[in-house]
Image (tube, rainbow, N blue to C red; front, top):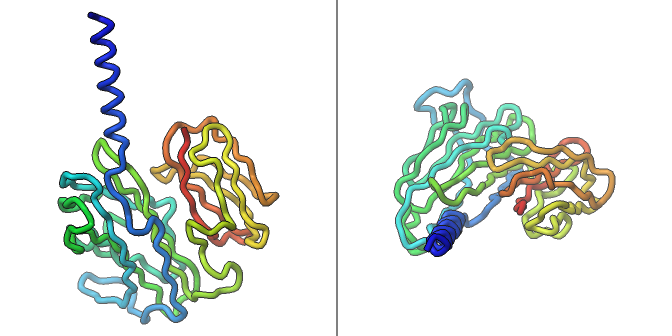
Length: 261
């Protein structure tokens, strides 16, 4: 009887663990990239409540993959969020409201709540909105802005979504930030247990690789001395991690995800 109860209890824990780790949502794009050769209109500074600065809307959407309605939470990962001098992440909109610039969501990385997210792709587009607004004034220096956000369901799935904006579209160096399916950068195996092999084509002139956990805390920094770098990840805890690859002059080349078993 004791063995039977132990078996039932163990199976129950396994089912609960599986349910909590199952995918509950997905983004239209894990990394949304935009560029513009001119940028946005110049604006007065500092920002005052009620100002209507010119901005670029970076539209993304989130889809509920379950049969139930739920509220998701999100938080900007400040350690992986940057803007060039004079640029501003002007806002972030979920299906509840658009957060204004220079408030706690971007200044201190507070956890924000969405409105209930209905199931499926047939849910009204407004209920699936998840977009960022960027001000990249034409009279300010060129560069690349990056905002990475942790999105999660309480006691459920946790993932990240990234917004990148570049001005101009074809600066000297890397022509465009690499997309997730660009074969010039690969991570294998993925998932990995002990060693993760990171390949970056020599034409990209990669200089450094960083590994962050899902909360944005840096776990590793590895210099790039060859096209393929074997990274010992055996000491990392199981879970999802983000790889950030930078060029020799510090410019962002790409970000990728991997899972540590």
